[in-house]
Length: 276
Image 1: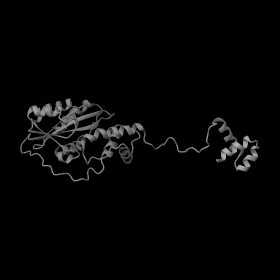
Image 2 (image 1 turned 180 degrees about the horizontal axis):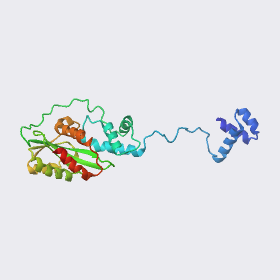
Image 3 (image 1 turned 90 degrees about the horizontal axis):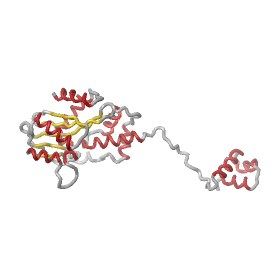
Image 4 (image 1 turned 120 degrees about the vertical axis):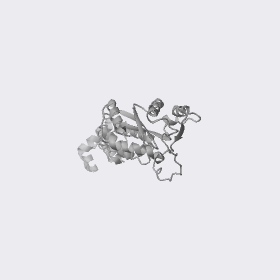
């Protein structure tokens, strides 16, 4: 029987508080506390409750965790096995001036807790896949989407296309990535680079049209209408599309790391100068 329950029973039996405290080796104040507690909670079982703190001062705020998850899902379309998601997410949080910015280990724990990691997917060997031959300009053009955040948190979706033979590149900036934006980019880019024989994309839904069987997406139908063959990059095999990935890496180092934009309209002239 808990000692506090014995104290209440002895007090109700008429024992003097000094005598009760002496027998139980407790103070009078302790005895009066439990008597008052039992009167306030008559159905208590006197079981000890957890003394663990309800608030952890070092715990990552839920708003920051939700932002980490949202950034990770936004980066999912790149399917780059060499992309350091935790480091990229932390860098974007700093750009958005999120406070507190979680450490790399904390970001990784959040990704693990939400099932947003692909452990072991980069260790398995990839099967041999021949690359399309590009022996002349506009034989093969590869298109990708790069997501970036401006100062203040605004998202911009940049569609980039590169020619495998000449290394010529074209890019357009959009507020979102949709089939309509994809077609707008392709029509504008074909006027700049020319119409290719083969267009290479990754498996993002805006290119492929989604996961519905027997349905051709708008991007595929546009290419077939113009007479362009379509090739999709296998999932999680970004190296297969290394030409456009190399351009994106160079673009990140020589453009995004040197410029910080707060408004989207300031991005376009700087992008044109970089492409030139």
